[in-house]
Length: 210
Image (cartoon, rainbow, N blue to C red; front, side, top):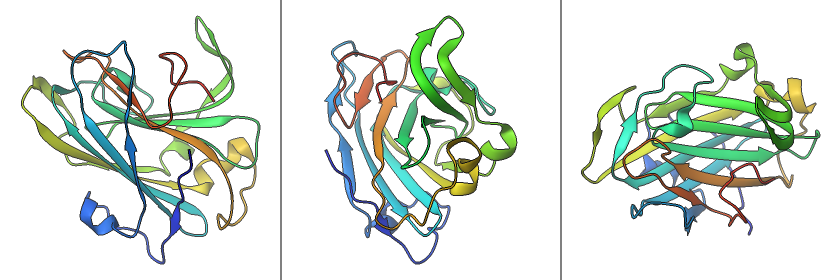
């Protein structure tokens, strides 16, 4: 699978306006894990870049939306959540950016994805001073409780400057022409209707499959 990240001359406004991103290609997450409930969200993502920043926006046509985990590095995957995993062209590992529908996010750098009781064999939670260089804005409130069971569409927009990742992976050159590997995810582990939806298919129900 291949996704082309088009270049932009100006940073997109932080307004979660999907229609303003028409210059970007659209990827749809169509691979629903068999372990999921009967909930079938429709999720799309668009990316853009300039010389040293990646911009992205998710569109989630969702239901059973719940958000209770707030703050940096909390377990947002248990809420209604979208995720962007990416491996730059430099460095040993990959990054996982996980964003709840309320805008809280988790950001790790994983060098060895094999699981342990405490996480992974070799990984680093990205220090807050670098993690806060990332911006995440969503169209829903910070907390959504009780769960919204009726259909709704929500958006999650994010910005990843290279300054946020270079302390972990090393210097990233001008983004023009680079080839990275990545995947896009949607989940809701602790909602009433758990589901695991991906862009690229996975062999097991585990998003850490670089």
